[in-house]
Length: 443
Image (cartoon, rainbow, N blue to C red):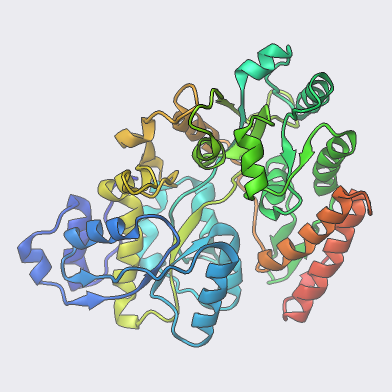
């Protein structure tokens, strides 16, 4: 991420902004600013290093160590409860797919006046994810441009081409499992709604659209959504992909023992989906290529995962500009980027992220070798990020969608209902829920 000046914050903040551009703080400028302290919630590793780096640049601003509230549903439950009681943090980490939920509840502050000049530092589709109706409600932190991870040696052994299309992916999957019934080309995770939505995204689906009149158009059972799910459903029926709940102990064991020749993944996946689960004596060797395409010769991809830093309604008005400064600094300064890209281990001292900002590739750590992978993995994902389909939107009910659809996917994977029925039931449940929550919905 490149260093840029923030928008004017007034006389006091203007002094601070000069320090953003220079990356360091001087005694003179630091003494000109008031003493400020505010809270930050995050689930990323080594937050104390992020804070120390910021406080070095801004010694008059202090941030206590974030509480350890876990991630996912556990984190959001704590956050929602705190904000409903007016005791939320000043700055909080929020995933892109959860932003609409908090926007719908009016939990986040429009910080556009402080961060608009950073728009050029991020891909347009990323900035679009943190913007709504002319306002900007968070600073992008990291992203997950998608690609296909595969084992070249396995494909060569079974004379399988690296799949450039989803049709070839299906052909490879059937051929591999027929040749070696103890191995699968990939897995299908009925517990992971996020992956499903990302696969829809890559195919050009728009299951959620916020119309200009404030009405949400919802169609999770549309033709593109059905095409994608039936593609995977047919492979499940043929036994060509393994049904496995991801991010579980069994799933990790399957990866470690080499059950899969390939896996759809994101920029963070080589580390967190492959390297993490390898035994010390592992001989697995992986590579990365672009996502298989629905249209031959195309280069479309999507995003899986990624987070932002947002300023909440519970941040005192006098601190909002400093909170926005913090969110911008940790995601745009060269020193902040360096921490982002260092390994998320005690010895690595970093966060292990794939930063959202375009300047990510200028940091030496970006080109570091990823264990078990050939080539410059981050450079490849950096290319894929330029081909993310740009018009995908999230709904305010992503948590509820996840609960509804994973229940139905489990039934479909077990053969107790069709894949089309799984989406039709989810559609009905989601529309009913959204209407009961007071939203104007067309679906």
